[in-house]
Image (cartoon, rainbow, N blue to C red):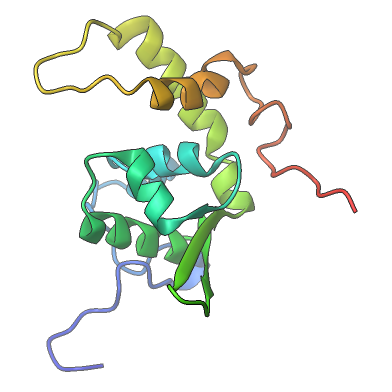
Amino acid sequence: MAEGRQPASGARGSGGAPARARGARGQWTPLARALTVAGDRWTLAIVAELAPGPLRLSALRARLGGVSAGVLDRHLRRMEADGLLTRSRHRELPPRVEVALTGAGHELLPVAAALARWGLSRAWSAPRAGERVDAEALLRQLALLVQAPGCAGGRGEGRPPERRR
């Protein structure tokens, strides 16, 4: 490693925890570690958008709205290092990159759903200045709002659906 450089934030130490705390919360607790992994502005939004299945990188960025390519790439790399998603690079012209949730990523769906339901009941209001209304985004989040607590998309246990052959 080059002198002066630190390991990537997703590098793993012993026990599977990140080797270096991102946004250290100052506590050694399960909640502090969970918030380090999933408690930022974009992680749960990315999880919610990937819930139905893999998306091309360009489609994910378009769905998120307001995220720059650099910020999205940084979050996706960190989520990949944390085991929440996978990236598939396809050798095509033009190049195609798809991202998909792993089992651990799917386990965050009930968290995203609970937060969305809380936001609907406690923080929902008319759009504020600077907020844009995105009807498609609201419709995509409808599944999060109506699912039973503790279930991920009605599939149970936060796991992706079994593929039929």
